[in-house]
Length: 271
Image (cartoon, rainbow, N blue to C red):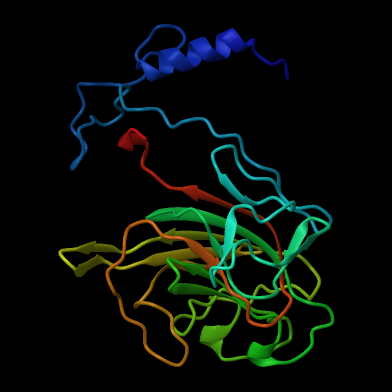
């Protein structure tokens, strides 16, 4: 397919942002009813256009995927400069080689904070051979705000309690299905996490998580009942709308690659 000159693309984008198509005709209508709860008419051509984002590439077993153009890359296979050791000891002392980081020597927490609504992409693989059983095999975890855990665990032919298996909201909700790959094979988590909202010190809206595991939907806008402690029922405690991402060291050498995050904002937000 023949590509258009850059000036044509830019001109078209400028016209669209002004509410007009390339032929000068209006993109929509201003005589239609107002959409309830908004300042826009139905099919309003003046409504802000979604910004253009270049998608990343899909991952394979041999090669990590790449991030979309508007993502913050947390780990690109080279270094852990976007992370800090959770014990305050500077950069995590995880082994970084061959495009992956291997968990060792404590949790890692992002230096930056994100939220309240984000898309997080994670690629990980369990140790080979699959030594141990239950929670003792390929165990790690992804924490939002340092308190809401999405479980990472080698669950290939490895039974455990359902609310503690891979992609479970730990201690609360098992995944819809077990979509785990064999130890040594790269797996993907795509997590949409909607952070909780608080008002005047009280919970206004709970957190929700939607998760795809290796492309399979396993959590469908699942409500969190609170934090995710071990052997306890979690509760909500007020915290800021933005928070760090933490990856757990559970004394298993789980490997990670291609970690990126996107903050999710409505097109009408102006940001």
